[in-house]
Amino acid sequence: MNAYAWLLSSSFGSIRDIGWTLHYATPLIFTGLAVAVAFRCGLLNIGAEGQLYMAAFATAWVGITLGGTSVAGESWAWTSLPSFLLVPLCVLAAVLVGGFWGAIPGFLKARFGSHEVINTIMLNFIAIALVSYLTQYHYKNPGPILETPPVGEAATIPRLNEIFGFISPDVPLNIAFFIALLMCVLVYIFLWKTKWGYELRAVGENPSAAEYGGISPKKQIVLAMTISGALAGMVAIGEVMGTRYNYYHDFSAQWGFLGIAVALLGRNHPLGVLIAAIFFGVLLRGEIFVDAFTRYVSKDLGFVLQAIMILFVACFQRYTRR
Image 1 (cartoon, rainbow, N blue to C red):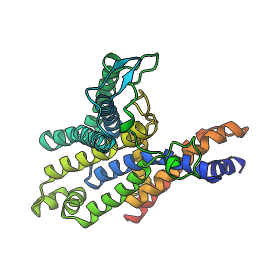
Image 2: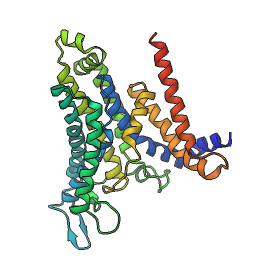
Image 3: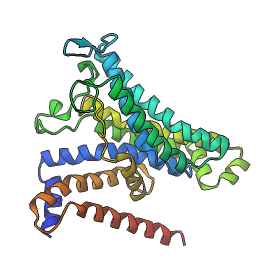
């Protein structure tokens, strides 16, 4: 019981703790939505990890080259744009590059019938290797760490402690959290209130029936994977523009893969994804304190609870389909 007390108190015990919990949850909202959209079309996007890596590097590249970045007297920038231009360009880079990397397995699935699971797994390796190469040999910040120089100040987004004075200065939660909430609303509207969302879900339920009704499964597959990749790429907004202010190798705590668990736990619904992401944020925040302040319980408690919850959801879905 002491372990569970630490798990909850470290996540909700103060405004600072809540801020950290929501910070951990923010990237999982994006990746959970990404996987959920693909699931709704009958696809399994295991490539969110590669998509967010590509988007993060692209965001950093735009923020560096157009943000007036200079390190040790050496200029890395082509020009220096004002914030009202550079921030939207960085966000656009994250969305477009993530969407493009997601569209590749979608096109391969639609055109050649190759399985999206295999394609996305392979593209994860390609993405991480590619951005590592570009960082190491073309955009490496001086020093032993594999990272880019910082983006220009005009490419950053505010942290919530800069807006709300009651939030502790050491909490990196930024406005990407509100963007994630907005994406939950927009994904819900898209999937359940638009023609395109209906067609996408119809293909996911029964491709043959959807095609008989005049819907092109191939178009919906490419569309679903593109949107999925774009949502995964939006992780870069919070991480590159609001937390680290550069691209840092291995910056992701397996968010792309955890997004699969978040989507499953949230039953592929935006509201469920939001709740599941916060639940995972609690586990990620709390397991640190459980490991440090309890004697016989390690941080693996978080993994155990994740697995139990997913098993319960899977069993519930199996039971309700009977």
